[in-house]
Image (spheres, rainbow, N blue to C red):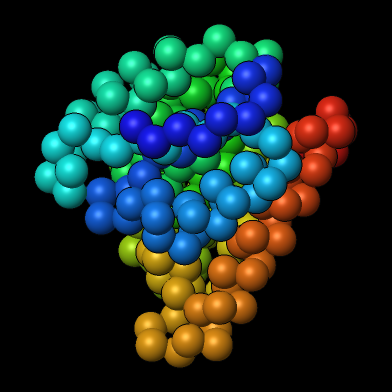
Length: 185
């Protein structure tokens, strides 16, 4: 686990995808935003790397989340990291859920029960996304038209950068409102 020290009362745990490490753009820019705003950030790496199963990721996520006792604990997860959704919902943890795998029943059921402030992000060209999924009352949804599971648009670099900018802006707004204690969610 890589750690970025900051305010010990505000801790963010970063849960990567199967082949989408914390250094990849979506997670990297979330880490940068959090560090810039003074949060302590913990980047989890799966024990089994790219071979991690959803069950292993859920267990590892639960262990990583249980290690935090801060006043404010935020989960930022990409794809496979969304295996932590049932656990996070049970604990009432706020989260940024980047391309959760909504084709997994436990993940879809947890998304429908989100009551803590959350941002759920997906693309309409992502085979694991469901534009008609039931999303709980604590969540805002950012759906990117034509974006795939990496929230990119094939080889169209300008559209990919535009999508990345939309996500970064949405996460920044989410953090502003979370830090401000806003009830906007």
